[in-house]
Image (cartoon, rainbow, N blue to C red; front, side, top):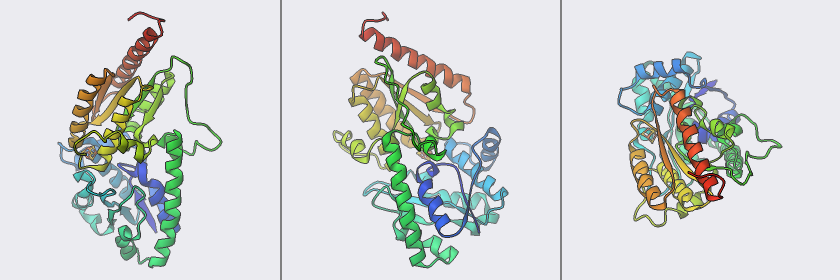
Length: 331
Ligand code: SF4
């Protein structure tokens, strides 16, 4: 039995759970291809124009899996992983949208309702639909989820050490240390953005590698602990409704508060509602803290040269500012 998992959205955060769970259940797991221009063009044809680009991309990944001949596609309905918070509404309605777009495949979309009290979404109750659809006894599912939970903890520990999700996915962590430029005038940037915007190399155009080639250290929200993230949001009267948006906002506040960060970049998708709040809040607070803040808004038409120019200009500005502080250049 072939189970397809779209290489899109929170695949970049939850793949250790879902891949290992299905493998433990004896299924062959098929991941969709890496996002390409051609796939995006197909996604656009299947999706309403005004929706955010990650959702357009998501549809193209589902199509890719169906074309690969999988028996089922796994599209969970992600509801909540924290009390009083939910996922962005697009995640709540994702299986319905997919079933509507891929009508002939509707019965072969597995869409369990994921609702958990923690980031580690391996609670048995969240996978009832998987058990029902694939006729899995609960004992077998419990064992599979136990393995999946361990894989997720290992994955999170590597992120917390400072490895990027791309490095973990590509298995480039064994016996290695995370990238860190230790030269005294090194620029440190806090990079804000959802995992699917930062780690889908077609959307972000591999922005982390671009910074590293300039000797810049980059930290993303997934490299911070939950405790650290929420600690820096303590001064807010209320949090946002959406969990992953809170993770981004909390990371942004951390980057603002910690002196080692010279600047912050927010990579956001055109048409993202939750990011309009984060962007504005970061803009106002970075002004107060006198910390450079840059928004990079991407859509399906964004060109690489546009991104490279902005990355280089921002880095150059931060380097000159930093060197002027140690009296090595005047700005
Ligand atoms: S958080 Fe923004 S980018 Fe992500 S699915 Fe929701 S609207 Fe789209």
